[in-house]
Image 1 (cartoon, rainbow, N blue to C red):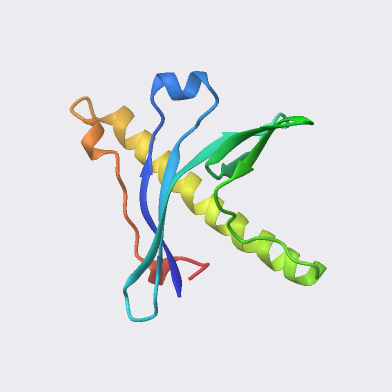
Image 2: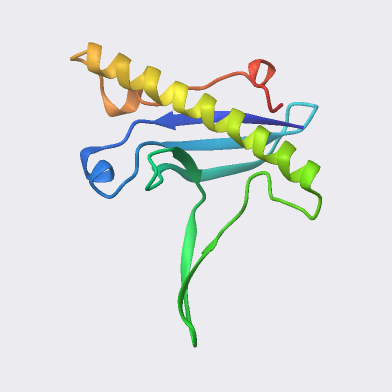
Length: 133
């Protein structure tokens, strides 16, 4: 199986104001080339320390202990083995780096073109060139 970047999107001014620095949609594709799942709504956020990361869509649950935010899904979830966790972190870092590169490339392209429209904000890549495939 492979993970394809189905599209990256530059943030709107409103998104930037709430801390969203871009977004990405991913596809999980079988070895035969069939899409198995599409993961939409993944956003790029910035930590208090200034590093950017991928944030999965989440929903709020109110309980006795107060509000909690639960994620709809996890990319490269951790397990009980530290070697496994380190490999998952490496894979997530590679994916994050590629998404940030594509958003930066798209932002540069939009800044250099006065005729860019929001319909042009999607970028697709091939899974064969991706390090996590």
